[in-house]
Length: 408
Image 1 (cartoon, helix red, strand yellow):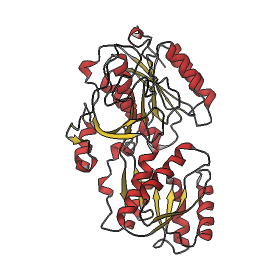
Image 2: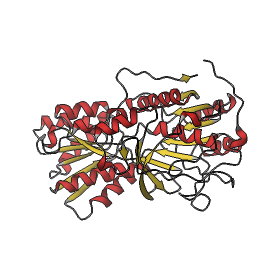
Image 3: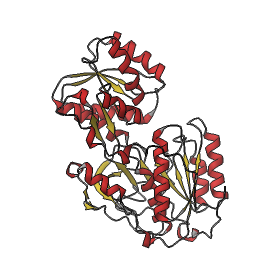
Image 4: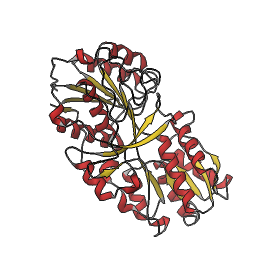
């Protein structure tokens, strides 16, 4: 596998490490500590045929905007200094640096936790598309799973040794990679926090999956239905901060409504474990009428609900979208799912890296998230079924796409 060693423009980024703390770089301030680092430009309210206000965008307009060469995407500019925070969210439209503005021959490295499921395959596809658009050189590594901290640390070292000007980091751990991040940013390598989130303050940008938005979108949907809801959460493993934030934002958004959470059942997101948890909850909470959980939970729940004749009484809502959930929704075996529209995050992360390397301003600020929407199938009722509104390019990989690890 050939990797080109480049004449880096590290002089552009030495000293440009952003603390992303509000004291050192406010949302309207710089992303680096150098006095000559350009301040972010305000994200426009309209660009590429789409609007910052997501309610004004049709699926057709979104699809057209995100599939153009110079794409555009409605986003949330998040005002805070750590992943998973609940800072102010300002809507805007993200537009990438035009290819005419890319002067350097840049080499980028992207690290993914794995490519074992459609979600990360979709992020890989987005990386490849953006590398093709920009003409940068891209090397992709996958760690093989979230337990592989040592392997990802080695991959970070390999990126630097092979001449990467920037690293797009889909981290397997929120904190374990921080010392390595500090080490390589001190050498002038740009690091962009991509999708999963790290707590290091040395990254120069964040394009992250936003659990708060997902939780709030589900609560908003249920609240606006105006019907009593007695739900049980099946978020996944215990002790995961992002999942706790998901449920916290759900609870906050549901306040003042008839949406109640009866309890929470934690456990591994394997299908057998989720099936056991759902079966236990049906016994513990006979009034339960909503299963709120992972995509695997929705998949596990539909069989037992059908067997017990409860499909019409107990509905399901998953907090993320997968091809399997899409099929369940179409077949009436799941009710709703929150679609994060977040396969664009890899493209945003790459654009952030290129902007820092080219000494160009970031769009909006140093932390970008995406808008979520609730997608429902026929089981939710004809009046709210909206499967046709799903923008598949933002939520599902292309059929037949296989991971690509090198773009020259």
